[in-house]
Image 1 (cartoon, rainbow over the protein chains, first blue to last red):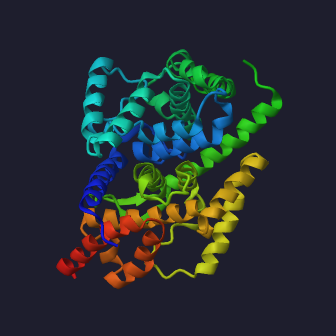
Image 2: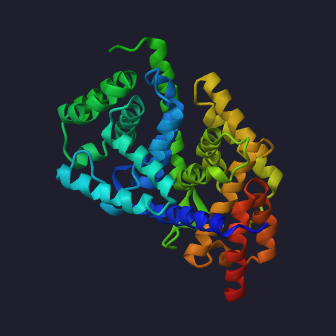
Image 3: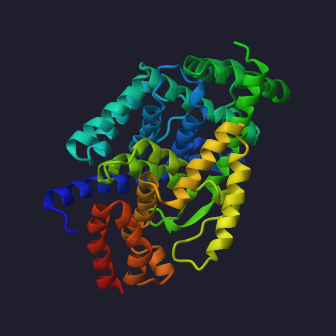
Length: 199
Length: 199
């Protein structure tokens, strides 16, 4: 089989993107693995969170399209290749972060053929805006995974950032509860229990 | 919000699964990152390959459901938590590997609520059997990613396992070409070129 020239150029562009995003495996997050052995990277985190969506789909609102949520989550952290991870309990300047992430999206998704680049950027912006039912559920899962990792590893980023239950409820709980109230109802007492025993 | 007891038990089972699969991030593959800095793990590989599916969907046969392919790829390596990765150029006893992987699937997917466990095992077995159009395309992508990583890193597992182009064509090329002939047509001359210059 011989590829027509335009076909080869299209695959070249797609592969330039798929090779560039390999760098997401080297972006390190605040959260550790469940066994506490090391911090997780944003590549493996993206896999884990897409599997969260596949497994926990029944806890989404009825109008959520889980296949779109999974695609959103596969893309959601790619901008961190340029901007780095911004820990939820950190004190980053939010508007500076957003400008950096938007430039990263244009550069990295811009490696793709034009209409596909537009499609991926649009899906990533929908996630960031967190207004549609799909994006709201995707954001809920992205906030729900770290407390599960922290409970498994014995505290993790809660200890490192010295946070209180009230901070978690405000920054994490409100977002989880917005898209997945059953998941917040499930984990809230476990977090309270951890704080009662360890803080 | 208070969860009914059966709802809490269901989420407990789903979270036991999602915490157990975190261990896939510690299963190391033969392939390295594109920059050659370290070997990749099967968790981040699973993310990368699901993104391959999302990006390269147009190169699948017309009857492929890319959403099912993505779900298959999110699950495809989970059994390696118990059985380890089996490098494509290694000399493992294939039937022993299959027995180990099947037992791993029963144990790990068995953590989920019964009907969801059945659904995930069935999807994983479909991938392994590589007979349906969705599974054939998923397998093609799983074989297509490592040569791209090897070309980027300067040889990778080709050097380590001292393989010839003919071995790659037989073990990798035939599988890529089966589900994604355009992708094999794209990469075959690049691999030939690498061997002409380096071997």
